Amino acid sequence: MARQHLLERSQLTVHQMCDHLIGLQAQDSPPPFVGLWSRIADFDPAVVSDALEDRSLVRITLMRGTIHLVTPMDALRIAPHVQPELEKIPFRKGFNYGAMVGLDPDEVRAHGERVFGDEPMSAAELRKHAAEIYPDRNPGMVVQTWLIQLPVLQTPPRGKWKDNSRPIWSRVEPWLGAPLDPAYPLAELLVRYLRAFGPASTMDMQTWSKLLGMKQALDQLGDRVRTYTDERGRTLYDVADGELADPELPAPVRLLGWYDNAVLSHQDRTRIVPEGAGSPLRAFASAVAPVLVDGYLSGLYKIFPEAGAARLRISPTRTWTKAERAAVEAESNALLGFVEPDKEPRVEILEVDADLRP
Image (cartoon, rainbow, N blue to C red; front, side):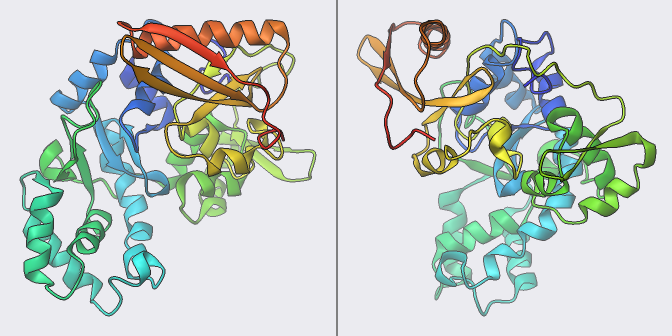
């Protein structure tokens, strides 16, 4: 929580926070705004919108094959690490029922490079080209393959505040006017991961990144890292100068965006998701997000905009004390004031659902 800037709101800028967290999950448009609001004091969503326009932040497929909001430097230096693993996905039998099986990956990529060129393109335009090149294949699956094979990003207006436009895609290098940086060491990326998510096991790091070679990269760091042994006997790595927060320190209520990195970036999620609560969280549709009480997932919420009002409904996963309930209500009203400032806030806290209880 401390390293995620969830114990108290930070004075870091938006760009500094994106750099520290190595991006924010941005598969949908609202979550990175909620994530930044939960972490930065006096967060102004216009900063993100302006940054997408001036290209000082971008939305790109990186860790876990999902869209992240990152700095241009991270887009250029992390993409070369993730691309080799991503490119294996479309030609497996399990990818869209074998839609691309039998095609030559290099040939498909070459067609994609010619189609994209240097200008942004909509999915509809890409599908048109795909149908012409591969008339016997589903054009949508061909386009999806190109979007995985090639380092691409989503251009604005998608991703700006209150804008969920259909994606317009661009190759990374022409959009940023700079080449990819394949020389960025995996070891340095892991140092940054530990500063934001550590202490962590090699499996935690692999879950976060979907990359291999964790142990070899850590060995290169020498005395820049130190190790702990957890209660299950597993080795946890941390930066040598990393501070551990007092475990008795109270953690304030936080409402995160759906698929927030704090929840998804470890194999062992019990540090934030109590045993047994993970399955209900994964089973819910998007736009259902975590409520953290004293540092642990203790409920799920969703916002329902209505005419003149904004309703935030919460399903607790355990019984809350009166003080905890009051804190959840206060943070929920604050979030509604941020997300829907012109609407009347309405917070509904349901009874504990036996199906959600860990």
